[in-house]
Image 1 (spheres, rainbow, N blue to C red):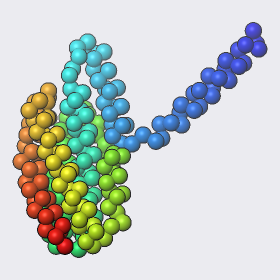
Image 2 (image 1 turned 30 degrees about the vertical axis):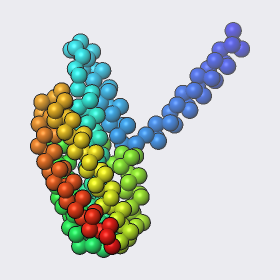
Image 3 (image 1 turned 180 degrees about the vertical axis):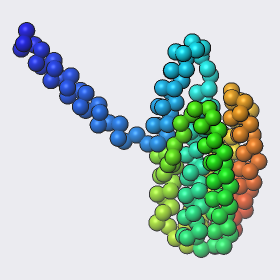
Image 4 (image 1 turned 90 degrees about the vertical axis):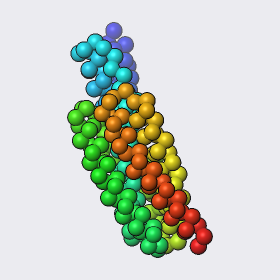
Length: 197
């Protein structure tokens, strides 16, 4: 009996030890989504009703990560861009997205939704891609990215505004869509200007 217990104990210990080390590689959006899932499970257990807000939560987590990226890239544009138009666009991104991020943070807190405090893996990759670019190379890469990013943002925010489940999150998305559309128009115009260089 003792011979049988020892190997089982060792296998269990090894399994536990290896699973503990894997959590360090998760990015901030995964961590936030996992916390929200745990909160949902607790809510459902407490009220015994299925609250269909998972999509709304995922929207807020993704929007928070994207907003943080916009601010960081906007700050980068102030130092790495050569075009005054690109610098101006970057400054506008810092102002508008900081405002939206603060509003999003307050909304998430009121809903007990955990949002990331740093850009998630996908958004961090965009930041890393542009960090070492300078001058005209930065201008072209940044503005091209901003056009693509704002097309995606307009689509996601529009979708949430029309199809979301939570009235307050829908309202936040609806208020933000016109600003994002304006950003997309600005980005397209500046992108066309720097592409010609």
